[in-house]
Length: 325
Image 1 (cartoon, rainbow, N blue to C red):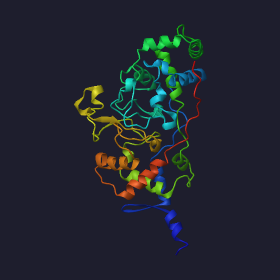
Image 2: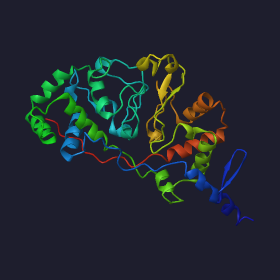
Image 3: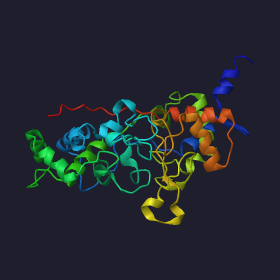
């Protein structure tokens, strides 16, 4: 009996209310998609090496902020999951914003940008933080004037946009930053390897968590390659009066609605929720069970789903911190 017990455990995933045999796990795996190496690329913004290199420089460039010390990388720090790991973003003159900084990783797979979805794509998103008073607080025309002062930027913009007579423009700044951000993807997570056929890529507990994730309905909103439906759902987390999507649409039905965040790399992009008030992944799982599914998860279920979420951390993108002029 002792010899067969490990085999029995390996052949089944235990979940509340029943047992899922190994051969039946395929139906659960079929609910998920591996993350591609590249996201969709818009027809009007091809990802040329020159454009990506320029976007990389601009992502780390603090001169396009009013203070000259804040860059995109200030809040989207590569060492911190391309986020900032503080509850709410801190911007110009120490101002604290209303919302938690979402990671830029895999952001090109999302159907819209920002918690409230006010921009449809990365090109639209790129200029917002530069001009926002609470973030970089910089007039766009002044930012472009600063860049024009440097020969290397005049050269890099000309290389990236060779058909433009005046390549240093707001549109081209947005296009180049978006092109760079489309390289910030994290394929080949342990879960992706599991989906591709490596049965040993994740633990048995993570497999149990995958089953619980599906059976409890989490997959209804967290689906697709980025594990988000990019839709907006109502949730009023403790300590937040943020009206969410309503501030964009003015529709009463959009009050307290926020975009479903991606679960890719969620284990390294804490804290959680739109106001960053939830510190741990276990706490986030329990809250989402109560608020979105109307269920009080047992601790075993919380632990299993958390183990599953840890398998979604992929390979971090390769990039170079640029030498700025």
